[in-house]
Image (cartoon, rainbow, N blue to C red; front, side, top):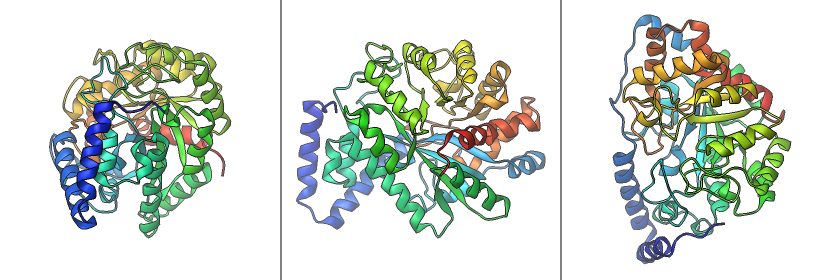
Length: 399
């Protein structure tokens, strides 16, 4: 593990000591208040629901199997079984948006003042989140413990849901989820993903602990370079290291998908050169509509598709080049033109400290926008979830 900066640890220790002298009810109240205030500031919705689309778009959307490849909702401490008046995702709003499967990503370390150009690893804002929200003491320094803790929270959510929410770990789980939905049951699935393999705490063998915790998708880098791979937003922006190659082999052996979101160009090239299974880019944009270091070139789109993988198009302005649903649709249409709808999916980055034009209950807005951009129903069905179902149905462990 890379240790947090002295300043981050000092601030966290002071905050933790201050909260520790208070009783549990007061600590909980303060933690909820701080998390709520922060989330309202960061997880902005362009236009709150309810959302309305044409009858034709609504009819099509209700017939789709919708899959979103990236949301950071576990980070904010909300009970996802309760419809919230803030943020982007919870189970009731997933149901309203007709989402069949939501990938819940776990970020374990985020630098202060993050940006898309250049970040180092010396600060650790999630250490403060852990203290404020009352996570176990093991999570204050161990990134792996943070991942395991948030995974347990999602599993607990499923256990408390009365069957309306299930965690998908295997192809058998996915098939069961889809069969239940086809039979008319109201049920949503969740799949666990890691955002940045620095959380392995320097131990490639910890892939086994990730697998046991329920994770089935692993991003190699997040906002800074790590011992495995370079980040598109790091200082060096290097490629895959020997340890990174070891981790890739371990992930593939366990039927865990490699995610290249946030990876540097060098890392993307290195992974694609050795990948023996499909890879994904869960949440990104395309440089043809938003030219920046966060997004993929057409050549990179083609290289990912050549593995049999998919690219999830994000919903926020850096990914799309605009702040409305039409901008998302334009980015998707470009990706479809380059690599085909079978290799394009959704990667909203809901609850990822980004502004989006609608929350997850408004997913039909995107279906309507794709119709307006000229995609046909077959292409829309693939983009909205069919391509993700295809990939997961062949790439997850069989169960």
